Image (tube, rainbow, N blue to C red):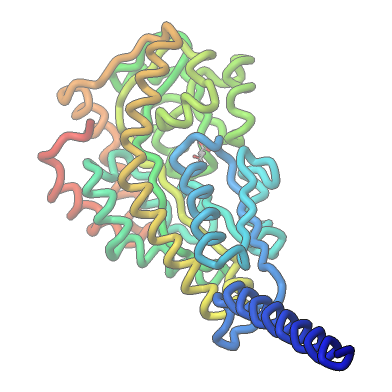
Length: 356
Ligand code: LMR
């Protein structure tokens, strides 16, 4: 009897043990599904992504969405840590931090890439894109491809573009409606020779200032105005230290999504595909959302402040266009004839539609 009992205990224990091992392995296998193709991701991959804007902006939200998609698609094997508001690197620092590999990803405004390749200056030309469709066609077509390719010699991999929208003018003392209303004003600009030239042509002055230093400089009167999208004007509260805003839609603000190229090549193929797919999804998402976000935040600015807003009439806008037009000829030798003629082609194609 004792012998039978002993055999039974042995059999039951064996059965339970094999159930446990079977379940455990199965569970582990499911967890390993992401790297079951010998790509061998043993440790979690952590990608640091630094940017300078607030979280509730087209770039802030797209960056977070990208992080969520990568984490979800990789079953938590790849983690993107997003650092907003310049908390890791400022405007001035982020490009060098990317090139030297201190950070793996950034998404600077295209205006800040003129130093990497002068081709990028084309996107800063006044009234470069007349409509949203023109932006999409430009960035996703030959113009965008040629710009991203120009980064390769600098150890930078261009993954795509996000859009913030078109820039407006804010300032302190009087409404800016005609080109000569810029006289004696001093504008904060991003570090870009084209933007400097733009204000020179308008008889105004300009000063390159870091994005996250701009509020302080506006408040102290060190500069009298600035140009930015509604979303940046709202999220950084510039409207609280400015009295006038002109809806001019005179310039483009968008972002190149960049990764350190050596780091990109060090990633397993499967991870690179996953990252590019996630970027493509966020590019689409951003296209569907940036206009709504700017519209909603314009509504909030009107609700929360007494800033006086003037929207340029087509006649007034035409005066600005005429005043700034010579810049296209001037920049042809710098940005290249092909890019200028591509932009001009888009302008002719879309100029009849208005950008609201
Ligand atoms: C600015 O400096 O005004 C912008 O480039 C900030 C941004 O990244 O949108």
